[in-house]
Image 1 (cartoon, rainbow, N blue to C red):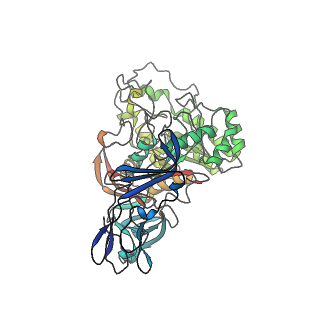
Image 2 (cartoon, one colour):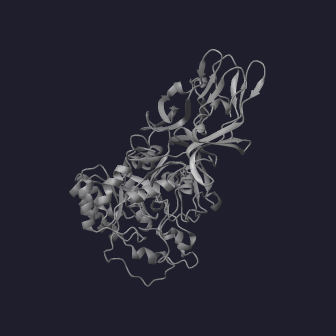
Image 3 (cartoon, rainbow, N blue to C red):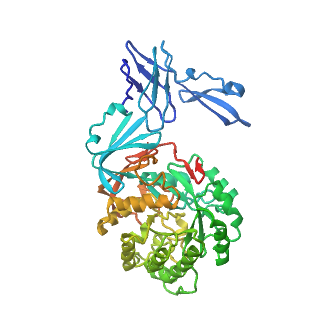
Length: 569
């Protein structure tokens, strides 16, 4: 670690840091080297001691608890007794953002001098609005405060920054915003959880996820269920996390309270969701919910399939993918999307179609938008990179709903992206335990439907982009900007702009890698992408100006925040 620059007549402040234990600070002065106190104090109002939870201060030295203070003495500790420099000068006070060693204060004989709290990120391929160019992004307090371009990038004075990260020819772009992730905590943490889902996201260059209201237990369909979910997610998120609420029959009175408590919008199903505690809504349920939400800026997300008795009840081979595909024909999506368009035009509530798989429905969507419907639509990486013709027999890791369709359909989805008819691309990360995939029998008709991919979205999309001529600016638009807008985060996420959160991914668009089970960070490793080779290697992920992942090494302590509609927590 390079020393922080302190502009004084003394040489420098060198800092030895054990992550999470900010002690052992050294000051090199005129005569000799002296070491500060090695004691660290951990204090709080809710410390769990033997038989009690109370205000306390735990004093630690050499990795052991050496003292426990309680009561009024907690507030009376002398901070100079901890990690203190024992010289005739007063003290060294240190402000640390984990992974970003800046903001050091030195109090000497005459005055207080502060090192810069600014960090610079520069490179020759920075994805800005409408361009990819040489740029330097200046970050302070987690926000972008300045963007330099042209010759000024090479002329910066590195002593004006506590740290300069030079990406060279690697790409610097906004962190991916994945607005469709199933984390499943609480209740189904054997499927996934916040710790594993968000660590996988971070390693893949995603800095924000929005968690779906199912398949956790309880489903997020009430204020109390939301409060439970927030409790379980605390201190487990490596990236920033927002939350969708759910619309189910007879919960319309819960919608505004959930909205006021911070959900970013609501999701509903027009067909059985796969779990009984998140039932599908009827037209009358939708009417009741839309009536309540029409005076808000909330968005309603639709799983747009309807059971219209049009799927075949096949007696075909259950291990054959064709058998499953015929049970979920495109007409099921088309009929559901007709209803979504009707509701959107009638109530003028923002509506969003999740995981579109059938390109046949695009004309309906285009026409509704032409008529003024506030309607958006997403598709998923698996629909753009996998096709029905190449799915092996019994390979149930490929099963999802709606299903992966033909290569011809896939080409039409890409054309929909090119024409702007499809607004964004997401993972729909929906893992489960291996036994639910029925790998032993290979039965597509009984296996759980869901694909795990939150770690690999950027590389999956970029690999396909090479074949279809999509640019880095297209990647940012479809994976970052538009997904942030959907979740109501478009004023702070999804772009490199002054005032926005300093969330970046630095990646090499030319290098390739093969996905192996050992590199998968989400809890259950089964994924249809294992063994496949993809282009685009993520090197560094930055959240709020702090490096949370670098060269496959993740920070040990989660630093993500909750992104609530009424403010960040």
